[in-house]
Image (cartoon, rainbow, N blue to C red):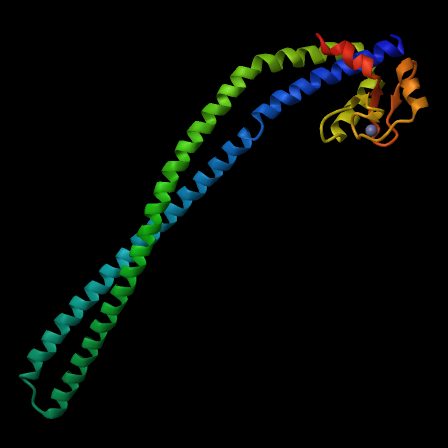
Length: 245
Ligand SMILES: [Zn+2]
C-alpha cells in the first residue's frame, strides 16, 4: 500500500466513523434522559412510601391519644363516684387532685392530636402532589422510551452497515497506523483523527499550517500530523474526492 492509499484509507475510515458518531449523536441525550426519569420515578416512589409509613404512624399515634382520653374519662368518672363516698376532706382533696391531673392529661392529648392531625394533613399533601408528579413522570418516561426505541430501530440498520464498513477498512490498514488512528480519535473531543487542511489551517484545531508543510501534505508521500493537535492531515483534494460517494 502506498502512503497515498494509506491516507485515503485512513480518511475513508474517519468519514465512516464520523457518520457513526452522528447517528449516535442523534440518539444523543435520550438514553441519559430515560435514565434520569427512571431515577426520578424511583425517588418519588420511595418518598411516597416513606410518607405513607409516616401517615400510618401518625394515625396510630392519634388513636393512641384518643384511647388515653377515654381512659382518663373513665378514671375521672370513677374518682367522682368515689368522692361521694369519702370519709374525710383529705380523701376528697386527693381525689380532686387525681381528677385534675386526668383533665390535664386529656388537654395534653388533645393538643397532641391537633399537632398530629396538622402533620398528617401536610404529609398527605406531599403524598398527593408526589403521586401526581409520579404520574406525569411515568408518562414522560413512556414517551421518551418510545422516542428512543424509534430512533434506535430507524438508525440501527445504518449504524450496523457502517460498523461493518469500518471493519472492512480497518482490515486494509496496518496495525501500527490503526492503533495511532484510534489513539488520536479517542483523545479528540470531536472524534476526528484525520482532518483535511482547510483555509491553510488544520481542520481539527484550526492552527495555521506553513505553505511548505501544506505542499508536503499535498504530495501524499508521508503521513504528516498536525504539530499542534497531533491529528493526521490530508490535503483538501482527498476530502473532495471522498465527498461524492
Ligand atoms: Zn491541528
